[in-house]
Image (cartoon, rainbow, N blue to C red; front, side):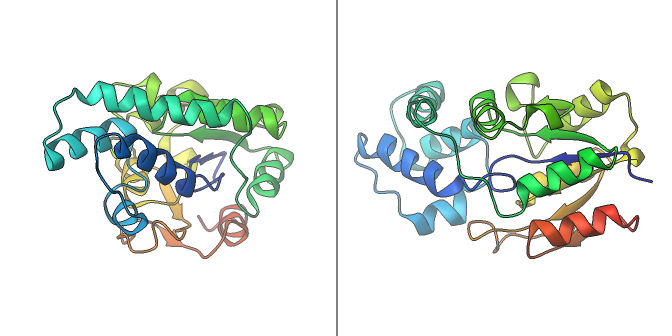
Length: 218
């Protein structure tokens, strides 16, 4: 029986990938790199910023450190979040409230830094429904490594068998499954082309995933 539901943040709870793409476009334009939305979808969506930075340096031969790109991308995102939060994905708020109200533990497990989830919880008054938050800043290795999920289990004092996850990307599913956690995939427009064969189930929307988790078949 599932006792806790662990949600990814970007692309799962919030519709942020398009903004992340635009923020990367802003950063890379200073290096005369034209990042199209198609390239972002194919090679960068759902991947932690440090990994994207390393990949960009290797691909384009940029003469800077990956930390420089990480900071520039982070600065662009923080500037946005200082004004507004990411838009919630359809069904995200209802799912969080549904599981909290039914007595489940609720977690948010993101491979990104803390700024995005902090803004989301504050803007939509969701912190009162969430029992644990783990970000990429809390662990040595971000997704697709299982570290984020293993830390969430530790903080909740639960086993992998007690939990289920909801993810929108192949790397996110891989992270959850590598931690031994059952995982529902809800692909979005930026991740629909990815490989979700390792997910326990794949759904078109959050409501369907929540029904699967709640009915005891997860």
